[in-house]
Amino acid sequence: MSKVMIIGAGGVGGVVAHKCAQLPEVFSEILLASRTESKCRAIAAQLDRPIRTAQVDADNVPELTALLEKEQPELVINVALPYQDLTIMDACLAAGVHYLDTANYEPLDTAKFEYKWQWAYHDKFKQAGLTALLGSGFDPGATNIFTAYIAKHYFDEIHELDIIDVNGGDHGYPFATNFNPEINIREVTAECRHWENGEFVTTPAMSKKTSFTCPEEVGTFNIYRMYHEELESLTKHFPSLKRAQFWMSFSENYLKHLEVLGNVGMTGIEPIEFNGQKIVPIQFLKQLLPDPSTLGPRTKGKTCIGCVVKGVKDGKQKIVYIYNIKDHQDCYKEVESQAISYTTGVPAMIGAKLMVEGKWKNPGVWNIEQFDPDPFMEDMNKYGLPWTVVELDSFDLDN
Ligand code: NDP
Image 1 (cartoon, protein in one colour):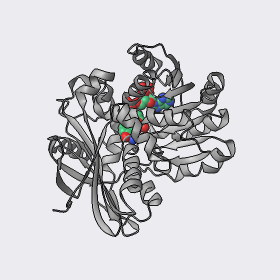
Image 2 (cartoon, protein in one colour):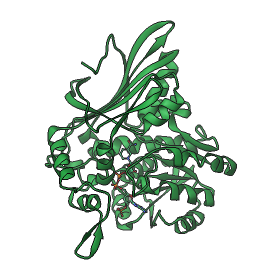
Image 3 (cartoon, protein in one colour):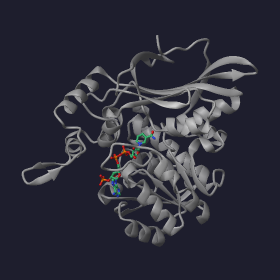
Image 4 (tube, protein in one colour):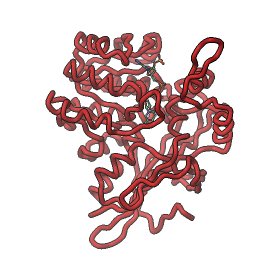
């Protein structure tokens, strides 16, 4: 029986609130806090069970610390934006509260995300006897756990990893992003990095494309190699990996819009002067685009996200594919959200559940793959993200 504070009332925050509210025996009390409290209240009104809401600016450490000290939750589930990770970790340390997030820290003024800033908090969390769990969404999150589970149960040593994230859904808008537009566009316009023989190799954004046929008739999609944050932690924690790549599906339409927006400067993160006021183009663009949390009713189709792992078992080469398929409309029926927020919010709830149950508690800062994957995998099957493992005879994305 634990009290949790969810920070962030966007698409993902809504799903986390729904899923935690479904488990009163685990999450006895829920406080949903965000910058705009009316958004918290709108989510609370969707639930079958009363939860409390609060206004907080998570960039302000003293303000957040005071709220945490007053409310004394056991754990903060941070589903605000990556810019807030460090201030929320600081407030958790000050107030003695465990911490969980779904995306690694990114400075507002540099489109660069890496774990070094959060890993630097390890000793402080350890000394305080607090656990910080990093990257408990789907990717990062479930993809890290899939890798850890497959490495544990199917291989003696893993050598190659391809994480493949396909969104076969369509929301009917000419252009919209499935999660926070600013974060999404910063991520997909960043140059690509993949792991090859012990180092990251850099290539231009979206320069490698191939096609991938998803299982269970989800369809065939163009996928593009890009950098994604779990590559950093997975290559560190599975040093036997010789190659690791991340692939994501994009429609031609999405990429064409992005190219044009980029060409005219709308995806820039540097402030520009406009009518005597400073504006950041990408933040202005976010205001114009559909709010991802409103895409639920109109998104149809399925997501298919998983990992293909190659390695050796008992001296023999093997290839294993593990994946989850999720229907956007099924998610909407259950929690009033599309599948991207759903597939992020459910692993956040599961990570939180394992922490408050004491199954995943260890003072320090940890990436999710550093914990035992088995209870997480069990809970994915129970709470809406069932997975399938198949052995493949061959697999080559270079064709
Ligand atoms: P949204 O933009 O929909 O929601 C973000 C929420 O955070 C909003 O409610 C926003 O408030 C709130 N917020 C922003 N700044 C502050 C602040 N300073 N203080 C308090 N609250 C604040 O984003 P999503 O729900 O789509 O994404 C949430 C997180 O999940 C992001 O970090 C994203 O990167 C991550 N994510 C992870 C994925 C994974 O698989 N691991 C996949 C998808 C997302 P306001 O309403 O006032 O703007």
